[in-house]
Length: 447
Image (cartoon, rainbow, N blue to C red; front, side, top):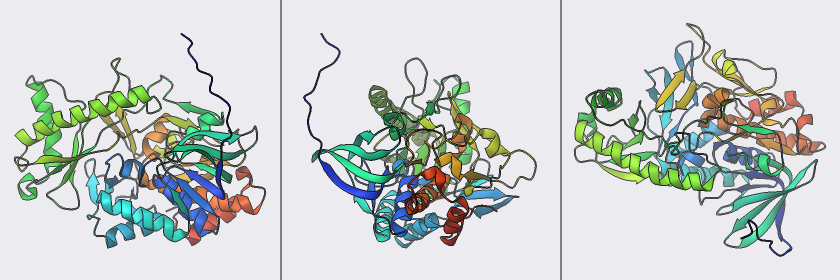
């Protein structure tokens, strides 16, 4: 039997033309679309799901990491601009809990209600003047050696092309990088990627009796394994209350192939295995929590993330590649377009490895250079933002979280606007002008 089937040639309809088309509606994508539209550019945001938020909604994450930095011991909101406006929208919907501290109280994070985030994200993007296209799955790109002029999508309406003058890849998986043969890499030098997780939420918790359960659960799990219980999917389970103490989120799973490698988010068979495995692991960990942690006796799983949380796949090889050393040395750059204060959070085999900035009193955040959004080769009108931007495995282990992705997205959308003022070549953007535009919109580029 032949390994291929030749399909008949056909004409693919053009569904519309925009100045800027953004692929992917996670933090970087919704920020990019908002920035480009506010600058007056006709903008389309394309998302495969029926809502925005990426892993923060579809993956059930329910926490913004990387919005705050530990600056010389003080917890400071360092990702500002459009991201803080979005937080205000979520807050007006009653969807925020006071920020909490994680990882031995060394860094601050922000829990939120997922439905409120979904609604606020719709409002945020549409108020800027951008268009949304939901339920459209990108499957290819229309491009030549120098430019990409459109994205090919499939939907319930059929197949079509979305034309653009500037395209921003916020897909997370760097899909446009693969389709346009733009230089990129995947995994660390040994072929290892960060392990994905399935998030789940627990309801009917007695918050008063549970107390700071997040401090005792990891120890209880270690003691159970030492006493002979089979190993859990990973050490270092994270449980925290959500908007209300009766509902808690759990980050306690780790998804792998039979050979022990991480599930690859670009392989549909592995994704399928991960979805089934994640739900199985969620139930396993929950049964232990309910049976052993005070306050959880009447609890039940109220939701399991609709899709597994992928942390790493393709990463751009750009004009600059952000490294783990850049993160830990709190590097500064002349072309800074935002900040990252999250530590290296490496989800390694069976465990979680947190690596902090060097020194006893670090500034607590690194700057993000514009060059990490700009391909070293490939289409001249392509920008890349979010977890598929130009970072090493170690650098991406920190700057893949929501806060820096918001910052990268706002910068990419603004840069697209500036590129369109000239020749639409993103590498030719006037970076001082870009920085001025970002600061005028409230972004912090340094501390």
